[in-house]
Amino acid sequence: MSVTLPEIRNRYGERLDVTYEPAPGSDRHSAPVSIVVLGHGVTAHKDRPWLVALADALSAAGLASLRVSFAGNGGSDGRFEDSVPSKEVEDLGSVFDALTLWGVQRIAYVGHSMGGAVGVLRASMDSRIACLVTLAGMVHVGAFFDSHFGHLAYGAPMLDKPECPWSRALAEDAARIGSVTTQAASIRIPWLLVHGDADELVPYQDALDARAAAGGHPDLVTLPGVDHRFTGVVPQMVQAVVPWLRARLY
Image 1 (tube, rainbow, N blue to C red):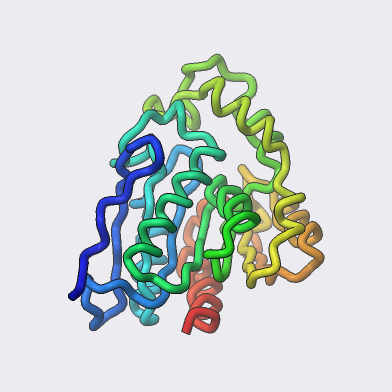
Image 2: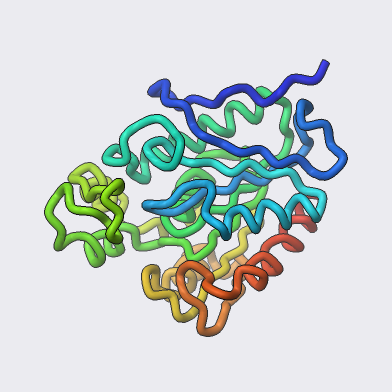
């Protein structure tokens, strides 16, 4: 008997807002064999246009996807002030728990910006991730937050978003993590890095450092002149990601 994906809650009991997109022709009440989980960056949520475009392209290629808003973001329960990388790593584990119980056999994870760092941290400890994609992914997490937000008073809006206040918890968690190069060095699954070399928030050097830390084995797609949000070139980003995932999940 088919069973719909159950409500997903993290270990604090907070409900995570998700959108499941089955492959065309599939029963949305039955677990797919493979699924691509899509995670957003800091101050974002699952309904960012590039995430929706990627999910639509995955569906067109025959791949199911699950867009996730981490706790404290978008329509998920919780406070943004508590939405730190380490907690999002736990949230991702809760998502994988639910998918595994549902019957999914292979999980790929795609993370943007801070969601990329979350993916590296999770992949270094969780064998359920079959392949990993980081889009404009943070590597030097502590340096990123110190550079962009360290001058702000706690409670001040991040990136001019009043709903996303800068917090001591985020500052301290980012500083504790520092860089994810050690975790990157342990990753042996297929891994794709996609990064614009004109990224104004997460330097392109982060992608180079991640690849070097992982011994050069991750694939790297460089998008010339492209910013952090893939402005105007979302189709090129999608084209870099979808065939790569399809070749590894089919």
